[in-house]
Image 1: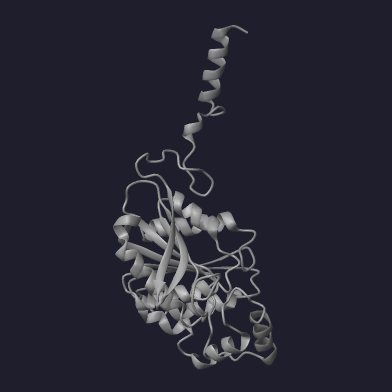
Image 2 (image 1 turned 120 degrees about the vertical axis):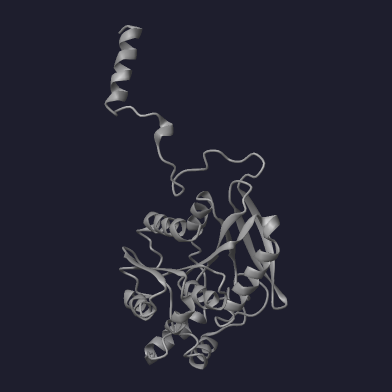
Length: 296
């Protein structure tokens, strides 16, 4: 085949849309590495020790590409935190967000004793640290968001309710302790048995967990926080097959928040279990699209 015929055939394939140049593909932060890393301010990894109530929390920040300052997401893990959603963290970083991940007091080597009630206080300490170190970490303090999974979703809502400068809050399979719902004895024993084996939670037990829930019945019901989110954006996502935090838990939170007309609320039900095991890509794209539309 002659060279001229090769050229004519290639031109014909392009005109038919069969052969497309590689750079015609739209950038997808979920599946593609940064196309043009900034030589002066490339993506970065910052190891952090964050003070909280007299002890240190272990954590890190994934720094976004470019000088910034960048919108920043505080990403909270659940109970005890086996699923850390770090695939989501990396995708968020590629989408242009800093992401700060940390372990609560008494969890996974962070100093101090563990307690679910004090997690919102740890988030407040982390937010204070971020604001104090905004220049070094290239953080836009006017664009801070909190996202949490499971118990982290519960904590994200509680922490954001106290901090009116947080404009966007995402709860992924967000847990709740509903004041008007009594646990059966079997459920209580399940909590005790599960918690008593969690060696990564310092000085904690099933008995302490039940005592915290019983002593803070109203405060631990995130439906009661609805009015705190007036003028802010809230995203709630749960899995259709979630047996740990069933879809009806989210439905009851949504029902409470829908009574406040000024909450920009989005609620989604997507395929998957408590860890969204069959919907990881869908989950990431949904969170990024929501953040881009409301929190950037």
